[in-house]
Image 1: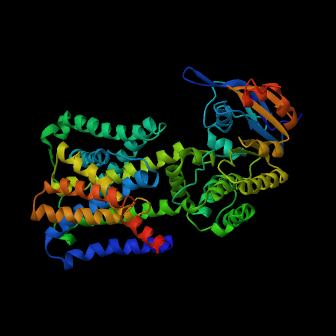
Image 2: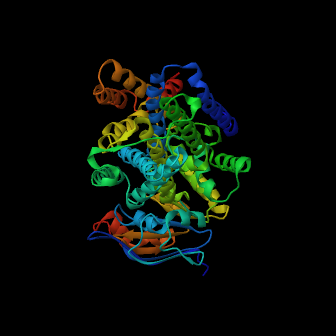
Image 3: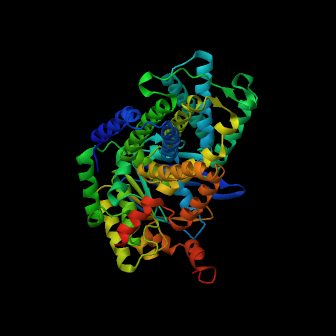
Length: 313
Length: 242
């Protein structure tokens, strides 16, 4: 396995490489579509820290994504905040939401946490619907400042921001996976009572996972306001985000960081192609069909399938 | 009398059903204590209260002179109170070695190569060193039992609670686990054995406590408990009552 400093160096190289992409890819559409694929890589990677490593299913990824998007839009409208501040603000709101939801529900195992995360989506969406400053049900028009000249346009700029976020999220996820935190989360997933009796402070670890997972998913929503110049409750708290966040790690494999990245790459790419060639409504159908197929045929995801084949041979 | 763990007037109910108590139990350093009783007598409830998985409704639990009644299970484990489970609960998705590293991460037993060397030592002592890098889900029933004990031991406990560690094993395998528990006890660990396999409990224990409907009905040496009319009544019924 690649050592962590080398992994970080490779990840940093990938991010720096993104700076030069506008020079070799002239068509901004690829950045526009690529942004969505990367966005789902970040969401799926963040979701997997709690849902995959610790085994706690979060149905409310869109609550975190939407909160991040609206926090960024708010900071932009109220203070004209730069992208970095928007990202930090979104991350903070995600951490707060994650800890609050976790603290209220994680003492009880299983389904209660899942139900609470669904409720969180409804609560936040209703809150935004009734907040005039955030545009209410009609949504909020966002006037983002012009991107740095180097990038040549907004799609290239937000693509680069999302690439940096993706690389950062993957580095965090891998560090957690190979560290004592990941080991403890996997122990919680396998048997919470056995983990607790082995000295693992399970509640504290789950709250930590909630905080990191929530923070990453909310940060994924931060550039959305700049990307689409418009935020509305239906898109920001969309079912598609919540469903994709769950489906992508399940398709790729939930036990390690490449799983959600691979799942997001496959599913989001198919969705982007389907959006252009067939219909945007086809997305949900595609997710549903692929999810059923994987649950039935490869419950451990693509990476689990590879491990299974290795064991059999 | 030197007491390592003291349970005083501990009670536990689930809704209207009183599962345990009030019971008093003392465990001495390096003792081999057997806990017997028919199904539903409160054995597992008692050890869940002792190890912190269930908060008792009443009573006090003192370990090494410290009141641990309201402490969470993970803190009790760090103090030296380890247990195995009735149904083995391996950390699936991890290798045998990684299963042992989980408790070691929290118990200040050193890190890196030192930590791994200690885990290897424990694996060798329970006969699992050859399975070190195998996924825990690939282990046999006997190996799973050994893994449970190894995971408890790596924390260097002062009290080990073995909850039906021999359930479902053959006679040869029972001997294997018994000799392992004897060796642990010789190394200074007090062992509480909860078991339905009577010849194993009788052979292993210095003292036996028998529970029935959440209360202690007999306590003493194995022969004293075996000869106790109440114990015979519980196990064999009224007709066989001598």
